[in-house]
Amino acid sequence: MKSSFVVGLGLIKRAALGAVLAALLGTPTAFAHEVHGAHEGHAAASPAPSGECAKASIECARSATPIFGPDGMVWVVWSHGDVVYVSMSMDGGESFDMVHAATGKMPTLDDNSEARPRLTLMADGSLLLVFTQRDSHYVGRLFTARSTDGGHSFSTPQPMLGEAGQRFGTPLILPSGRVVLSWLDLRNQKAAKARGQSYKDTGVAVAWSDDNGQTFMGRSILADYSCDCCRMAASVTPDGHAVFAWRQVFDGTTRDHAAARLNDDGSFGPVRRIAEDGWKIDACPMHGPSIAIGPDGAWHATWFTGAPGKTGIYYARSSNEGASFSAPQAIGNSANKPTRPQIVAGGGQNLWRAWKEFDGKVSTVLLQHSGDGGVHWDAVVEGGRTKGASDHPQLVANGDAVYLSWLTREEGYRLTRLNGSGS
Amino acid sequence: MRVDFLQASRLRPARVLGALLLTATLGLGAMPASAAAQPVQPLRVGDMPQIRASLKGRPMLMHVWSLTCAPCLLEMPLWAERIRQHPEVAFVFVNTDGLRHAAAAERRLAGYGVRPARSLIFADDFVERLQYDIAPDWVGELPRTEWNPPRQKTIVSLGPVSDALFQQWMAGARKGAPAAP
Image (tube, rainbow over all chains, first blue to last red; front, top):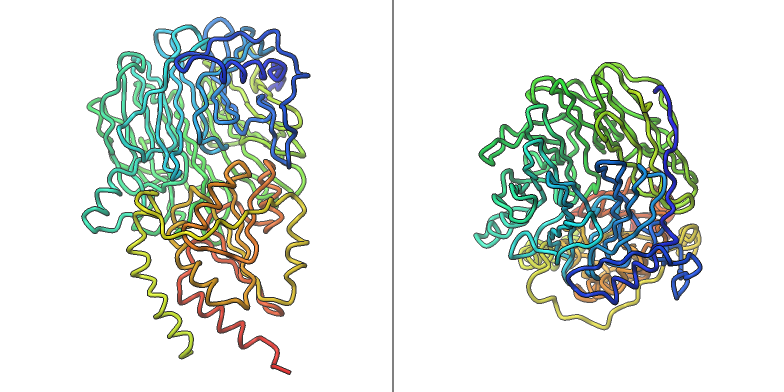
């Protein structure tokens, strides 16, 4: 790692209360309110009754996820109190001067660090928001909403399907301008049960849009028996294809990981097994994988397993589109319970991986860089630490620039560039 | 062992599971008849040692669950029955969804007739710390059940607890219990 410097500290909190009021008072279809004038002193009416954060500001959010646009634009999507917000920076993340409510109140929003609202920049400059709302039975329903004014206002959220039974919407923009959206889907489980057959898991469903998220095609389940409680991951191949990774239930018992490439006709290529961890467990790990694809087409995956004797996080790579993967390489200090691994590709053969460790008092984000496509990894460096609640770390690329995004309760939102501006 | 067998057959877990499979995983259909909801109490950082201490001397079974965990909901009818049948055991249920989901958690437990000795809910966003308080090596998989008989080794099970395993635990506790005065 050549250099590491913070380019932006979240200055979002002072603006957030106004956004809440906007959400509550605004029309149900759009919430376009600049909140420059709001003050931090307008704390939430009722103090937090416990260790849960009651203020409607990013510092009280459970997740925050950035995307980059042209000319220094950065949007960060987060949620609080069943409302999705978008914070905006026009100086590359140095300052976030505007917060807009992107939705009205959407009880009950699926918003923890695994199930986060997601934002994607479309080819025409519009924004696509993807999130999941749980119904009164806590069954998820996937929604999308669009913004054609740079995130100032969003359209009324539209359900992806006519029935509930979706979670973990994962959007990905392709070089062609097509946006693909994957999620975990209960339809085949319901159908199997209606036939009296056993089916405890979910399916991996994919939809795509060629009109910047206005209408979606596909929406079919392309693979069966995914673990229903672990989020998915996605990346793009150099030739413009989407690759998804998820936790798959193999043989009805074993919760290891799989990946597949999406073909042009909307079908999956072969579903590839990333590793034979052999975690036989009939439980919810609530711990999804991460995947990154380098400019050479190599697939790089990180994941968590609790398989006996192997509990921890791992990395493996494939140079043949998943037909075979390198032997899993353990990451992090096993004494400090490493979790939530992320991986991202920068330019050339550069890769970064990030994860979280917890020693009982302090959560630490750790980082590792590889300059040779994952064959060798530089020494582990610390990306941040906190003594309170925190989101899972996120790694995000903007061209060849790679950033660590981390939201902590005590320090606020931080967007840290990991490689020099010249590289 | 005869007693265990009779208890096991009365539970008829397969039939209960079959009938409630759809309800539990999809949340569809009518809930079982519900009693008045038992309030869930906030579980804050640092509370766990005191909770354990307050139950010292009794066999304690701690079951950690979430509203979004299908295997957790699937076995709730079994837990309702196990709690009714084993008043000698201190059942502690811990929900991980956070205080804002307290009402939903209460409704869900009441719907299944699950009335543990203590019903708690994560009340701090510092989830890693609450998990650590429950067990330093736990990463958050659910359901997690900890069987803690006095003067015996603690046993942890991730995933549903089969009826055979549960009866084995209960039998072990009886063997390990002090003789009646």
